Image (cartoon, rainbow, N blue to C red):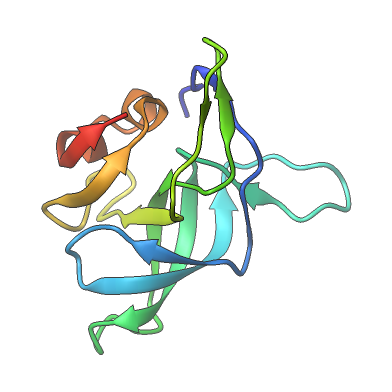
Length: 133
């Protein structure tokens, strides 16, 4: 995966419930894994903005409930630092479900803002976003 131009803060643990911020049919998802993530020995891996994660659908369409999908974390409440010195934090934790490993989103629109760091790594997700911060 491409590196992002910010100092990302470890934001969400495995087991965290977050919003699905697209129109794929899921509403609440639970983080079950972080793909290509790194961690210290003996420490649980955590997800940051722009990470490729595995999620299990907890609420939403009945046929999607309990299924596991790939997703991209697009917002986190924990602030992270940009190279310009500004700190970015959002009011919620949110993800976008992916259709395939190439990064194509499952839904056709992304609700809410996404940071510029997600746009650098996931161009297909950024195309569907309402606005970029």
